[in-house]
Length: 339
Image 1: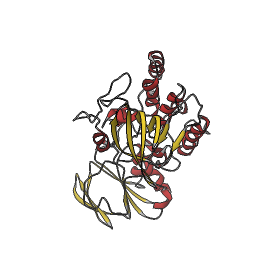
Image 2: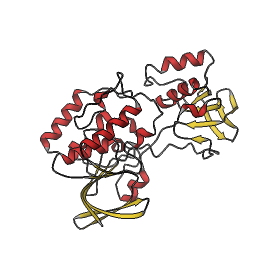
Image 3: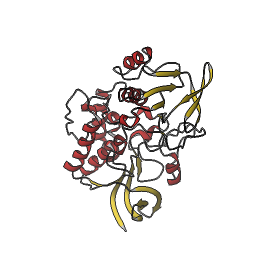
Image 4: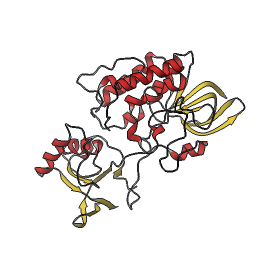
């Protein structure tokens, strides 16, 4: 049976930042993740460019150096695994938290590994699990067919095929443009009547021009009602329409693992799904259990990003002075954040 002072669940940027905060206070946290280091970024489309500037993605004071004005997916992955190495963080990828029991003076965490189940005892538990493993399902027939996916992938895979993309935020728009340029016949379906202003400023006019030129088809104010092996059925302002599709990407967003949190005994607000936390220390109703990053916002995941969630470790492990300094740094760079 393994015993740890601190167990951090989630090896994304926020989880790594929390572990650094703990380590700089003489603790030696263990980090586990159901996937790889920075698994959510691994799922990003190949070549994706961050909306956020590099200095706002940095953790632990380590500079993020990139070739252009903003980091790519590949540069971010190299950066975060490099930070983990330099900080000598102990990371166990592909280990999933499945249960929790509070015992006298300790937390008993049940985890699943490729070799079976293990028990890890810890004094403090930090959940920084993000949301990217749990897509917002449409609940329509055919959603689980093999040619339908809730994650963007390599645009080359759609070359020469009819591709239907559902969604109208940055990920959907960027994927539509990349797949079109890779040789796919792209149709974009979005439930709203127009793109939101938050779409990256360099993507929005590009897509609008491709639609205007007939290079990318678009169905605004529309929703998918059925996916078949060869086509997708839509409800549009003009009525029901059936569009041929070899591949379907349902880029409809994601949500935290509410089922896990409730199973652990974490109290959530019924409407928003926000965990009930001490705003100063981010400790929940379970003593010694803290939440960090986007999961603190419940269903409103767009409120928390790397750039404002990276200071959560200071709230959890810091003293009043360091918490105040973190809050001051956050306020000094506060601005609207993108997807």
